[in-house]
Amino acid sequence: MHLQVKKAILPVAGLGTRFLPITKAIPKEMLAIVDRPMIQLIVEEAFSSGISQIILINGHHKGNIEDFFDTNYELNDLLSKKGDIANLEILEKIEKRGFICSLRQKAALGLGHAILCARPLIGDEPFAVLLGDDLIFTDSHTPPALAQLVENYYKTGIAQVALMQVPQTEIHKYGAAEGVADPKNSRNFIINNLVEKPPKGTEKTDQAVVGRYVLTPAIWGILEKLAPSNDGEIQLTDALVHLMKNEGLIGYRFCGSRVDAGDRIGYLRANLTHALLRQELRQDTLALMKELLQEDSTSVNSRSTSSEKR
Image (cartoon, rainbow, N blue to C red; front, side, top):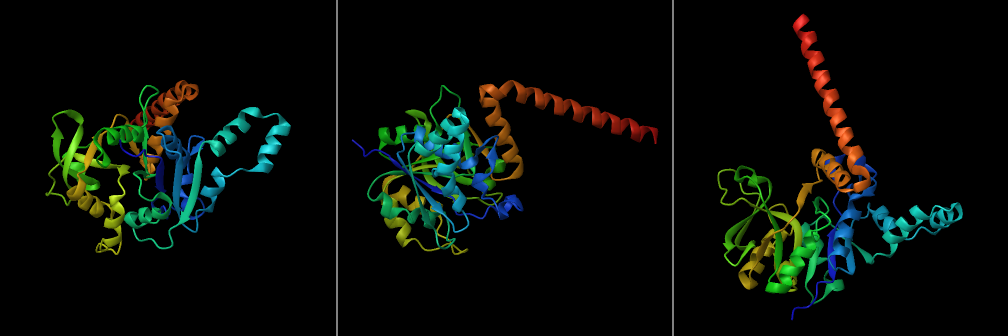
């Protein structure tokens, strides 16, 4: 019987430079997906996957992430006096869903280093890692992506990374998992090598690593001894290669739709995807999308006609 996966790490110390200038004042993780900050969707996925304790690996400029999950007594009291029970219940659900704590990553030394910061709070237990740029949407009949990985860890006892298939010509944008499919389970991919963003022309796989992991405590010793890469950072990919050689590593091809919310177009896509999955917003969102497409088509035709006249 394997120890249960009850703790999760959320690295949130990055500067979010791809979203400047807004991230000069607002952490990327607090940008809204419709009406909820991006990090709330990640936290809800973790708690819905059986996680009871979340550890934020934070930076000195990210205090309002902690504030968001804390109790705002003045606001709650105001909502209560106004009789705004609906919004009060929304806030209380966020505040009481599970235990969240925050640790400071004092230097930007890479994802592997960020994860290692949480060792004193996790100890010798398996744990999950969720990256905030990767939003994974599932319908109401499908377990969250992390829950799928956790369940597969219980079945196999082997560390898990989430995988999705991409065109092989695009694999240079991702961490690439090389290996073979498991003949006993079509969703399992037995990894025999990991390459972080392989150069064009060296691609050997179409299996891309997505930001969900279930790791065993053996990763701690590996991260502690791991030499920094050329950019001076401790890379999780390098540590996973060592873990793979020592214990094995399974890539799990999850059910769900992954959106990279770490760039502008991906962020827009995440907003639309989330809105379409919410029953109270779906029809209005579809109508808006059709309206904008129609307006764009009319505008294009108008410009074309004007150009022909000239």
